[in-house]
Length: 99
Length: 99
DNA sequence: CAATCACATACGCTTGCGCTTATATACGCC
DNA sequence: GGCGTATATAAGCGCAAGCGTATGTGATTG
Image 1: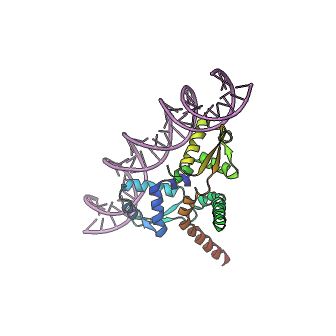
Image 2: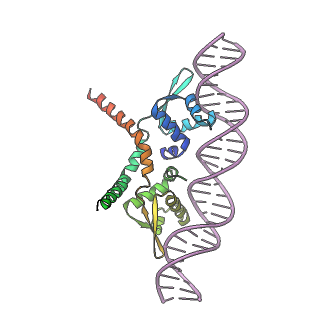
Image 3: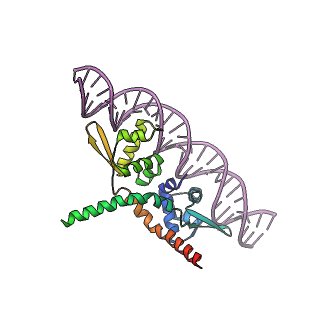
């Protein structure tokens, strides 16, 4: 599984969003997705770990998950060349409006 | 299917890359993915169409596909808040190196 | 050291994706 | 109108993703 597939899953994006605010324990993350069971969340976290989007640090019997800063950069690198398309598009739109 | 899933597929990213260079007919796109059959490519193009990443324009019996400028912006919007993470990370790294 | 808590893994199931082969549709040319 | 060309859709299949239930593992507490 690569970063793109990892991020394609809505529940995993949700988890990333929570970890963007602050680190959290696995249990907190489980509670934040009430529609899923604990094993389901645990597997999503495993995926995010394997593609390098999060990292884990043990704290006694808990496990603290944190966002890994450079994980999403690969997606950002990919999207960069396309960015000029909607920038150009917006510029053209603006010019049109000014006329 | 949403934009994230659409982009998670490597062949579809390939197609977007080609359309970023210039518009192409369906046939040209089929030729550019020699490992896939014509129907397979056609279905990928259908997906890209349905999520608004490309648009089609008929040209006689051909169909010309073009990148739709604002399709990827939804992904870019999503990634934006995370961008500061690796920016901060790089800044910290640089400060560390300067010491 | 037995019981409990926090989390991960195993297993089986269902569902949807992506593929190929076969067929339909629509245009272009003679 | 009939035939090749360009593209889309249909049908069927294999496989992997995501889920829940059940179980394992390791730390904590009495």
